Length: 379
Image 1 (tube, helix red, strand yellow):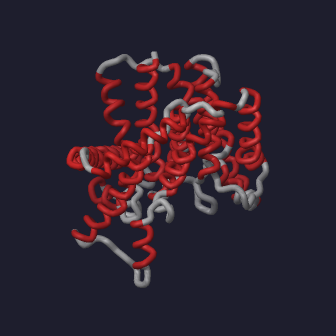
Image 2: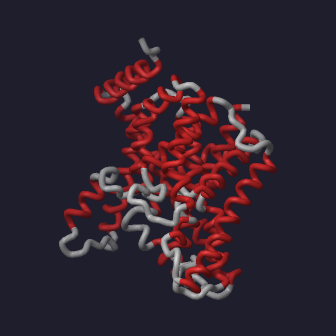
C-alpha cells in the first residue's frame, strides 16, 4: 500500500509543477482578471484556470512535509538541493552570456552577481529559499511532532492557522505581518499539518469523491469571489486589496483546495506499471523545471520564446488561447525535464569521480552522525 501511495504522490508532484508553470504563463501573458481592465472571455477563462491551479505550491509543501516528517535528517539531500540551485543560477547565466542574450543594466552588476552566487540568501527563487530553510528546520519540527501530544500538536497548528491564515482570509486589511504565504512561516505551518495528517492517519474528508468535491468547491469559490470582487471594485472602487487575497497561498480556500486534492491522491490508486514508473521517474526532475523557467534571465523571456513558436497569446478566441497555453506549458515543462535529466547525469558523473575522495568520506561520516543524533532518544 505504501509503495502505491508514494506513486500517487509522485504523480501529484508532477501535476503540481505543471500547475505552477500554468500559473506563470497566465501571469506573464496578462490573461487574468484585473481591476480597472474590462472583462473578456480570455481573462475570465484564465482566472478560472488560475483558481484551480493556485493550490500547487501548498500541495508541493504538504507532500514534502508528509514524507520528511517520517524520514531521517539527510545532510547530503540538503547539499544536493543547494548544488542543484547553484547549477541553474550559475550555468544558465554562463550559457546565456555565451550566446550573447544575457542582459545587465548599468550599475546592476554587483547586485546580479550576488543573486547568482548567493541565490538562497538573495531569494533568486523565493520558493527555493523557503524550501531549503524548511528542510534545514525539519529535524526540529520532527522532534516537536514526535514528543508533543496529539492535543498539543493540534492546538499549535490551530494557533498558526489563526494567525497566518484565518484572520487575513476574512479581514480585508493588509497586515504588515502577512507575506501572502510566500515565505518560511507558512511553509512551516503546512509542514506541521502534513506531519499531523501522517502521524495520526487523519482523514481530511472521507473518500475520494468528497476529497475531489472539497477541491472543486474551494477552487470554484475562489473564482466566484474573484468575479464578485472585480464587479464590486468596478462599481464602488472598494476592496482593492481584498481582491488580491483570493490568490494568496495562505488564503483559507487555497488551503482547503490543496487539502482536497492532497486527500484525493491519498485515496487514488495507481496500479504498478507504466503510469507509476513514469511518475517516479519524472517527479524527482520537476524541481528542476521550476529552477529552469523561474531563473531571473529566463522568467522574463520564455513566454516570448513560446510566442515565436506559436504566435502571440490570443486575447479574443478562448479555444485558441487554451491551445496556446497547453502547447507553451508542455514545451517548457518537457524542456525543464530534459535539462534536469542532463543535470542528474552530470551530478552522478561527478559523484562517481569523487566517491572515494576525502571530501565525500567526510560528508558521509557527518551525514551518519547527524542521522544518529536525530534518531537517538532524549535523556
